[in-house]
Image (cartoon, rainbow, N blue to C red; front, side, top):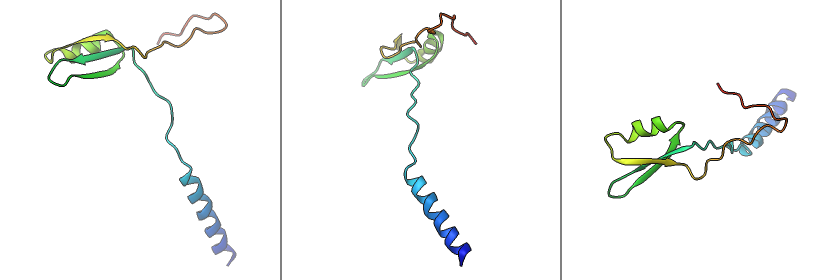
Length: 85
């Protein structure tokens, strides 16, 4: 009887925690956008480098432009140079 009530309680707690689960709010904004030419036009702002963007629009028509929503990370408060990987 105690085991059954403990399992029931554990199932209820797990159910309540699952209801409160939310997706992460982190969003990655890349520095380059491809603007595709065509009847409807489209935009893809998922490129890390300008060369990636150029390779994507090759043969499709369009142009690459800087992403207006991209802001690089602010400098370190202690003045340390950024780490490049």
